[in-house]
Length: 192
Image (cartoon, rainbow, N blue to C red; front, side, top):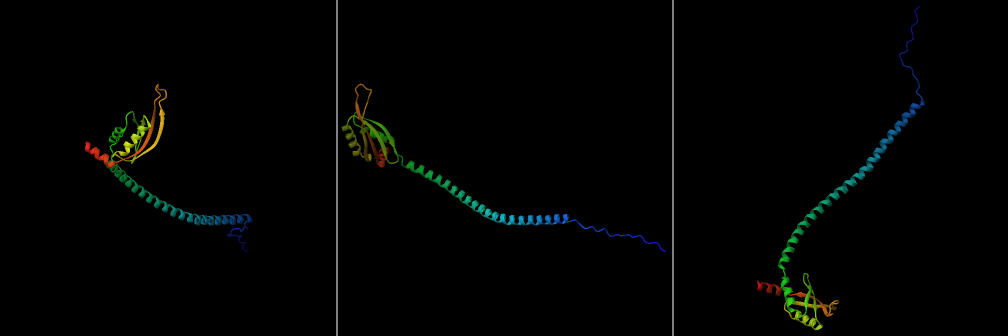
């Protein structure tokens, strides 16, 4: 009889997998889905913020451009205004030496001009005079002069020279004067 044939099984042996490997598979699948889900949520969340930030960036760029243009126009305007201011000041030149000379000429005897301050439209002077009659005389001389439009006596103080042997007293009179600019200009041109 024939010999019996050898039993050859070419199929691999089937072994049942353990429960542990399927748990790891499902856990890995769950983590992968959670990662994709969180990436999607972050994408949409930051995409909205990104579009808001891009809009804000464009708005700030436009604001910067308008401020730069405004600054450039101000620089041009400032240069022009400075130039026109200088031209105006040159046209409004007032000979202060002529004014001081006239103030000094009108002073009575035993009086002198103490301080002199010239501003745009008015002049402030302080004089030292020997008596109240001298203050009144000087005030009258200033108001009657053609060189001054408005003369105001603002303050009179009695001062004494302490420490000096004679102890003389004198009066300090402060005036606010508005000079007649046209008259001073004519006088200055006439003397040139």
